Amino acid sequence: MPTLIDLRSEGEKPGEARPRHPEKERRPDNASPRKPDWIRVKAPTSLGYHQTKELVRDLKLHTVCEEAGCPNIGECWSQKHATFMILGGICTRACSFCNVSTGKPSPLDESEPENVAHATAKMGLKHVVVTSVDRDDLDDGGADHFVRTIRAIREAAPETTIEILTPDFLRKPGAAELVIDAAPDVFNHNLETVPRLYHSIRPGARYYQSLRLLDSVKQRDPNQFTKSGLMVGLGETKDEVLQVMDDLRVANVDFLTIGQYLQPTKKHAAIDRFWTPEEFKALETIAYAKGFLMVSASPLTRSSHHAGEDFARLKAARLAQQA
Image: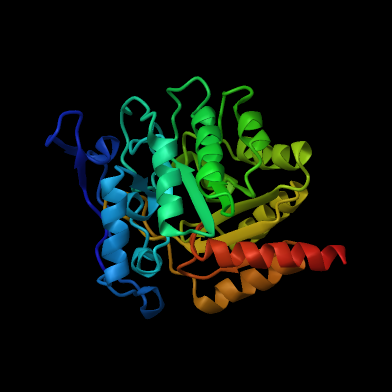
């Protein structure tokens, strides 16, 4: 599997290096176990990969593909698919699983929504996924920036369907409503893990706030598709994962993704174990039985992996249910 992790990032001044995760520098090292054969992927080398990389660089855009060290980057970028990450490249949270840079963010790039829209149109994306860092420093948590990005994409690429993967907008009254009312085709917010592990894995978030956010989408716009994702391999039990499924179904979430946690660096949360492909298949079967319209569960599943194809299947599943 290729090493996609850059332990350093740009500082406030050009050419200045800073740790990607200054809050983790003093943490003890966590050994990363050898990856099983079903986790391994090829290094990205295709022409399409390099063309996508060049376009992203030219427009000064961030992608979660790079920032989070996604193992599927070679496959997706070779097909000229990328998940854009707005609100800058520095997150105000310090989740122990995540490889996105943390620290004090820079001011918003006001041209970012239009640049994302231009890239969407130039790449000919039929379905685009837009996510972001957490911006607890902003009064609206970045909600208006999401709205501007959705509107810009609709203007530049009116036939493109839009999926957003948002922060939790914790303590940002009215922010979620702004984004819901912009009517993306899919509203995604990941729970990431089971509630017992939030204190160590997702300390800046609150499990029930995330559930309420997903529920509020359906309450405000019942026709909007909702989606959420989980990682396994952090120490959760199967029963805990099944309880999260039940919680998501109470919130009427349509689409569930489940993937294997992969440790970005030795300073990040340790991998408890690797779930087998057979275990992922069993989770998928159970999730469908619980009523999800769409489920993607495999070791390399990520929120935006095959998002366009999955959206088509999601729409078909709803139509079949309504028939």
